[in-house]
Amino acid sequence: MTRFALVVLGLLAGPAIAHPSHIGDVAGHDHIGAIILIGLAAGIGLWAALKGQKGKDADAEELEAEGVNEEPQEA
Image 1 (cartoon, rainbow, N blue to C red):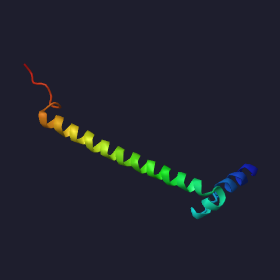
Image 2 (spheres, rainbow, N blue to C red; image 1 turned 90 degrees about the horizontal axis):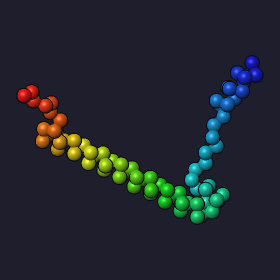
Image 3 (cartoon, rainbow, N blue to C red; image 1 turned 120 degrees about the vertical axis):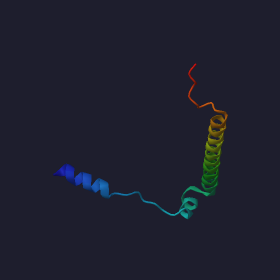
């Protein structure tokens, strides 16, 4: 019964989430700049990943147009 109660209490516990303006009060303005830079880096990484996928799709279509993916002919 104790384990069940602990599991229920563990599932009910949630993270204490504050809105971003409290970060400056707690950690100083330098941390806000770091958060902005991390978000910018994540956005650039996402953009590069999506751009890379388009390039792979174009390469696959080009190879298919050249007939590279066709089955070999019998002699």
